[in-house]
Length: 171
Image (cartoon, rainbow, N blue to C red; front, side, top):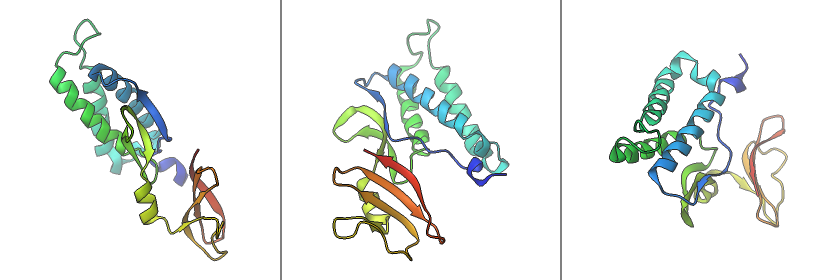
């Protein structure tokens, strides 16, 4: 089996919901996003060692889909639905890209999505390019972050052969 197909597929950075804090809207949007990410990670979730995660995600998605009243437009239990939004946020966090998070934007509490945790990058990435040194030394192995003059960031991982593979990029 291809190693890449047996990994939890990370989400891409960006907003998935903005301009609303209505429980109904968040419940619907977060459930849809979780379904899509679980689908993309099907190979990973089909491995026996990952069945507990698969079952937890399936139960959460099913419960979120069943949260609607008979009219299909209102929630059957507003308090439970709010709890489920929190549970969905926790589940979506598992799909955050390296050095990322799922939650509200620091400058806009009604904008939810996947974002970079700058402190985590600063603390854990071994090399960050700068004006003084653009690229890591030839013998460098590990993760490194390139920040260009406009502030765009690209996270790479360099293997023992000196090959750089892009992990993610944000503008």
